Length: 209
Length: 280
Ligand SMILES: [Zn+2]
Image 1: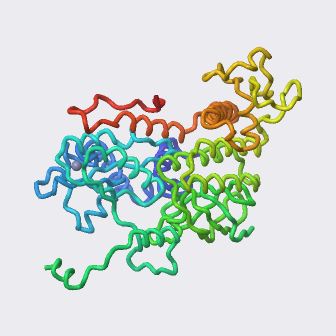
Image 2 (image 1 turned 120 degrees about the vertical axis):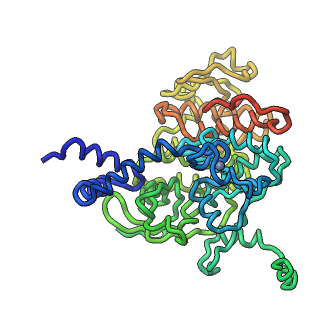
């Protein structure tokens, strides 16, 4: 017996989610229709509402319901620092770490030649306009340490360096809990080339106060 | 099937299910193949950093059927990563391999050539000639090698000083005698199926060495003509489907050029370079 057309349409829609194949889509569709119709209604309404309300912040490009997002609108943030990340999830991770009080720009991806994604799709024009218009003292590149993430950072550095703004990159090297024996050569290599002088204990103690 | 410690380069990786990657490898003895790297996207997975392009890897896998599972990966030695322009060249080579190699066709010699090209690029050598030699080798290994040694009509050896008309389905044919002595035109006429070039360019490609004796202008001519010849022959194999890596590289170039004096002018530039606009 063939499934009714609406069920087929639901399965096809679910398959658009990353990592969902025909089998999982069928499982999800049957679950929603048979066991959790309230949940299904909730999902449907949430998607429609998000589509209507959520857009990109006109300043940092992150998802936002308002024209300008909460971070960009906040007077408490340090407007002289601009941190560039690939995704909203990356921004969230930095916020969770709680070390950074500056502003962000979210690229919503990275340069990916094999996927046909170039600078135009990453909002590089808006990023440059921001760097030109705002009184920014430091641009912090926090793209991923993948080949594409680094290519994206290199490209942005080329474009913003003439501005005279200080450009920094997150440090690379050994992760917390990392054991030398199991480190890949690339990581170890970077940890060595970016090693730094040890602060004396008294200096570190003073800095803490 | 179980394969241990197979030399390989990663050509492309895509997310697969929640935590895995689907990886396209170019291996030494098994050619191009696709594997699942289970759990490779989990936060602390050691393999995550290794599964990136242009690293010389030793890979092991197991499984039957079309899609086997990666069981281990190590990096063999460490070289400088590709960056900037060399990275664009690397992606270009990877896209050519992805588009033109069939899965599971072994190409040991081509693997060696690819490895050499990556090594030279990471050592900071100019990509211009490295890419031409790689393209020549690739065409040869997929059975559509360029004819570089003999005139396709007369069968005579290619004379470095002569002008040839290279015809796609045929090969080089000596141009009329009166043009032979004339200096090479800087921009000889060409179309999709034929172009004019000097015998010395064909000889350089055959020997995989630039005609150093001729000095810089001679090398420049060989570089430019070889690029056009290889592009004509490759376009034939790609069936005119455009290369993404080439388009993105051109877009990046357009941005660099367009925004070169962005911060020194008083007002922001109007508009931005169009998508895919070729570099000037
Ligand atoms: Zn914002």
